[in-house]
Amino acid sequence: MRRSSRVGAFERLISIIYIYPFRCPRCTHRFRALNWGHRYPHPKGERRDNERVMVRLPARLTAGTETAAAETTDLSVSGCAVRTDARFPPGTEVRFTVQLGAAGRSVEIAEAVVRASHEGRVSLQFVHVGVDEQRQLAEYINAVALPISGGRPARRPRLSIEVVVVAVAGLLVIFLILSMVTHIGSPAR
Image (cartoon, rainbow, N blue to C red; front, top):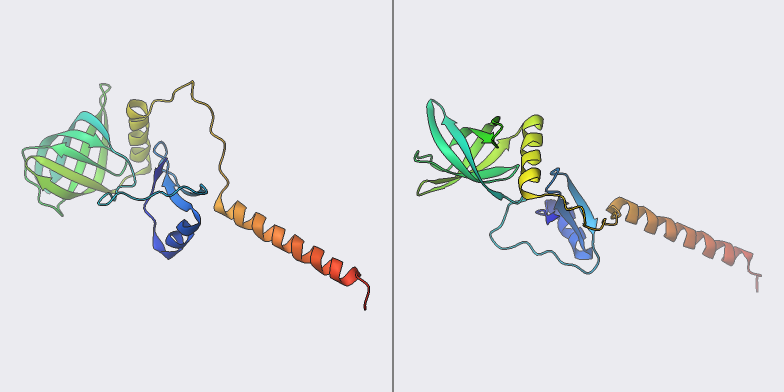
């Protein structure tokens, strides 16, 4: 699992007690988990929540009436980098189409924004990814970059923060009730 960026004051506060947000690289589900004693510092300058995998896939960028051929060099469910001869300045909105694998399955991202452009390389952030497109990208990335190893031991499931909070609150209520019963049942002096 890859630690996700903390969003808002609540997530910054609970990270003090080792509860951090994570994002599953297989299904892109975002969740919080407690891992007592482990800190997850976010590397300086790294703002991506999804890890990109190295690929070489044919692609096409379309901005308005301009269309350019490209080659995808890295890919995630939230963005990619491509090599292209066309010039797209940062901030340009583009439609991105990539051909996944030899089967020729194409995935079209209707809305992407150029985040950086330098010497024939363009970095894109996907703004709107449809459910089907996200599923296809995740399946491709999982098949190519994240193969499941059969010999890996099963991980024990983690408790969610809500379960931990409810359990602690329940124990406090039980303790208060027992202390009240003990106090009430003791003889008066």
